[in-house]
Each structure stands twice: as C-alpha cells, then as structure tokens.
Length: 505
Image (cartoon, rainbow, N blue to C red):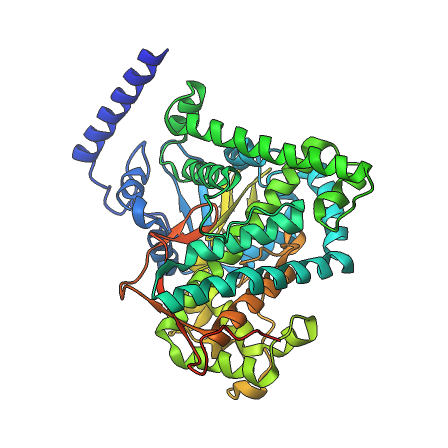
C-alpha cells in the first residue's frame, strides 16, 4: 500500500507539472464575479498554489474586485467554494437561513480528531444541547466572579512581575508567547480548575500545552491543504504530520481525561470549586462529552484573546497617540475589575475592535450547504458547496469601511468626533463578524472583552512595549491567527518614579 501511495503522489505531481507548463489560463475564462483565473480540470489550483503563502490577501484582492464582494472558487481536490465579504450574505448564512448552512461533515472531519464532539465541531441536536448547557453556565454570576478573581490573580501575581523583570534587566521577550501563556493559564483555571503555571518561565511548558499547539497547527494545515486527499492518505497510513497529530491528540485527551478523573474524586470528597468542569460534571454529562467541550473552550478562550491583544500592542507601538489616550482613560477613571469600570473604557474597547477588524483572531469560517440556495446578492449555492464568510477580507473592504479601511483608526467606532464624550457604535454584527453572529454567536464574547480590556489596561498603565524589529509582522491564519515568529519586544517602565511595579487598584 505504501508503494501505491508514493506512485500515486509521483503521478499526481508529474501531472500537475505538465499542467503548470502547458495549460495557460483560458482567455476570458473568469467567472462573472471576478474569481481567480481558472484552468480546465484543475480550476484555480495553479493560482491557489502560487499564492499559498498569502491566501488571505489573494482572496481579499479578488473579493475587492467583485461588485458584490463575493467570488466562486473551483479547484481540483476541493468542493466548489463560495467566499463572501458581503454583510447581507453573511447574515443570510449565519441567521436568516441558518438551518441550511451547518458546519458540515467536510469541516468537522478536519477538526474531529482534536475536538471530537465538542460544541465548535458539531451540528444539529448535539450542538443545540451543548449550546443550551454552555449558555446557562456562561450567564451564571458565580462563574463570572470566578473569572474575575482568576484574572486578577494571574495579572498581578504573574504577568506584571514578569514584565517588571524584563524591564529591569533589559530582556527581550516574546510578548505573543507571554500572552498565550497567560490566557492558557486563565482558561485552564476557569475551565478545568487546573493551574499549568505557564507564566513561570523557569519551568518547562506542560506537555498539555505543547501537544495542544501541535494538534492545532496540524489540524489547521489540513484545512489549507491544496489537495485534501493527501492528508487523508497520510492519516490512513499513519505517517508524517498525521502521525504527529495522532500522538499529540492522544496526549491532549489523556491529560484532560486525567484532570476530569481527579476532579470527580474531589467532588466525591466534597471539595467543590467554581470552575466550568465541575458544573458540567454535576449536570450529568458523559466524561467524553465533557472532555470534548472543555477542549473546545480551551482552544477558543486561549488563542483568540491572546492573538487579538498581540496585534493591538503592535498597532499601538506604531500609533503612540492612541496608546496615550488609553493610558489617559485608565488613569482618569482608575483601574478596577468590574463591569461598571469596563463600560467606561470606551476608547480601549474601540481600539480592540479596530485591531480585530484588521487582524481578526479567526480570519475565515466555513459552512456547507445542505441544499441548493441563492444568496441575497444572487450568487447560486449548490448542494454540498462550501460557503465561507471572511472577516479578514471584510475588514479590508473599502465598500464597507471607507477609503481609510487599511488604517488603524479607533475613532471610526464612535458616533461623534469627540471621543471623550462619544458613544461606541453598535456596528452591524454581520459586517464585523469576528465573534460570529446569529444562533452560533460566541458565548464567551463578554468574557473575552473583560480579559482583553483588563490585561491591556494593566500593562499599559505600568509599561511601554517597544518592538525589537521595525518590519511589518506576518499574519498567519491557522485555526486562530497568530504573528509569525512571535512578537519580540523590550519592556520599559512607564513611570521612572520607582522601580517597583505599581500595584493597580
């Protein structure tokens, strides 16, 4: 079988080579909606492969050229795909005709090994049941208070001392890595009642974290593969990246299962904590379902918020006036962790929204049509077609955000020019779909803003972040986006009045 596999790959590669050499794009062979140039049989595979390292900008370019901000993409080895940055289409997909656009088997298969039957990887009744359970838990005041307590401890006892150490010693640190460690600690405490102590740089990273990173990266590579049959055959023969994925997923599942077993023993002994795991177990859910739900929440709660904060710090390092406005806002109102305070941090929230508009933590999201359909802009969708809405491209559409759409401009989120007295706009969620929208809107949206606003405010009140490099970092869209190569920075104390990190209120 291995010989057959390699013969197949060799023949396939040779065939592609001939197509690359002798199959020039047909003249006038562009779809009516400005899709990429297409060849017979292989569709746009040539262009897709040539632009594989810049697919986000490749899609954005073609969407911007389309009068409806929608294109249809056909390529060998993949389903017919409708990609849209049109808010009316996005609303139709995520809300109006929600039932016709589930994630679908092609998508859930990509993440199935890692996420199993977790809420982010299922449809239908299983999704409804988990959504109902998670919705109840996320609106529980006691869980919110636990998140607040956990975040406060993590920021003051670990994050700020680490940054102060870097400032005192002139150390270069990877801020993206630090923020990912912070959010992993926080989400593990909230979800599992487990403290991985990732912000202690003197200790090796826990196996759960490294395995989680490996599994996420390889799963994302499946989705971006030019020809899906390749990764499926690698999985069949348990080789290469698929073998590594299998090993990483096994470690993640075993680690979480062990934590669940320990938690069950604690519950029997009457030792109850306030974490989400306890709530799920007490609700009578099966151990496998609890495991899958928790893994999904760790993935969503860790990578999305750390990515959003990383890009905001980079943007603010290029826009010091906006940074000073945040510092002024925090200083004037005082820094405390409660909902009333967060409501007053208007400019900080606007900066976070603007950062996520340009660099959304989830660059794109796909559904699969159950039946044939027609989108509001007239684009026809066939049964089984992949339908992708594209937050990264939407944030760069001049038709949606104006001629300055590529600029970091927090003021665009206010009704009035006077930011000090302005009111943050309620932007159409289908134009700014970074938290999804409709029935599957992110349940953790409020919690994410709590975490991001407090962490950013805490850092900026005491420190100035300066990138080591002046180069524009590369945005990499895996399951959640990240900054290629990390974000290397130097940390400076904002105040020179003392060497001790000021304890925030």
